[in-house]
Image (cartoon, rainbow, N blue to C red; front, side):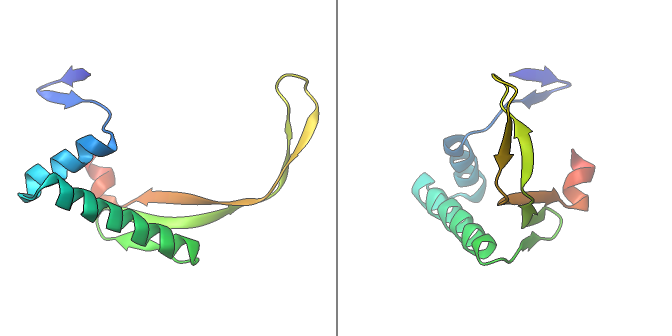
Length: 100
């Protein structure tokens, strides 16, 4: 944990996020967990279907395609083929970016 001018900087895991959500919203941790699970499920299903999720002021979740490419095995230096795949992306919105 690092402190800068009365701010605490640390990483947050799922249980800490749930506790923070419950405290801020005045709900139980069980309810906050259900809300977070619902959010992640909805985002996952939308991305899997080829769509994107935009939260104005926060950012956009989308799917990006990575083309197949050649890579190298770091142990042997041999050329290997890396398959094309889809990856999830997050682009922060203007409001979030300005607060960071």
